[in-house]
View (cartoon, rainbow, N blue to C red):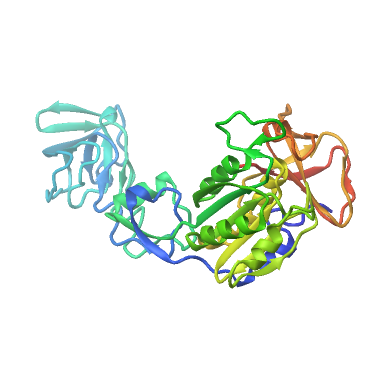
Length: 411
């Protein structure tokens, strides 16, 4: 059985998140709220639409006056006026009467439907022949039909989209209470690293993780604070990490989380004032070195240095806590698809695995095929080729070919 809640982070980290709480709320201008998370329930301050209006060009009528009409026996109505879009109207409508109206115009009193222009013809300047009957509310929208005053618009924890912003604008809401965006300091460690804009000397490689982690942080709704590269020096690393966490809500240290002679991340995170290690490691693949420490409500993560392991570590550990900080709950929050394994997938019992897969469409509406993208943790090609991650439970020894499973789509 493989469907074990793939949106949940590994159990060790989910337990470690227990003491963290969402960040404080702040008011932001509506125009700057896209992607931000609502911090308190938002209710409609007024009716939407604010008045009953026409959806078509045509004639405002009493629907009963058109019942039974047809092209051979049209209903003849007296035209008593015209309603122009954008001007408030207080025109009454009596029995047997019609008023010319344009799309968006406010319906007159007693009108309960609109006859489309295509279904009417003028007999003379004062008479219109209606050739197709209408029912009450046809071709019109009533005041408050979309939202009544006091109706719930969005619950706390909702992430605002473009259409949500349009709704708020339509109701005159120009500032929004949202959770503060987490500030995330990012530090890459390793004597072997060089900046991306330099040609690395012999024995060094360009720093990949700072760029990738910055993009992942911003996609998840955080604000990245890059702190460059730190050599494998305990004192220097401790000073940089202490400085970084003082200005941030979260610290990501990439590299140095294994047990090598020059891997200092665990010792450094433990030595930061008022910090405590919550999770010293976790059994997942690719590569398990991942550390979580806490300083008050601030989180300090040690992630692997290999690019594939750092990405999986971010998705499984960092992203859920960023979502918790912004009031969405500690889940991965990734879109998913159901797919069928294109070949057998092997895994180790007792270790949760995240298999990089490429999705291929199938004919006849069948689910896509998920094919593993093999490659060592330090290679970039498999990451670029993969569309998502297929989680395999630590209780499973793998998946047979043709098994349907959930694939987490990469950000």
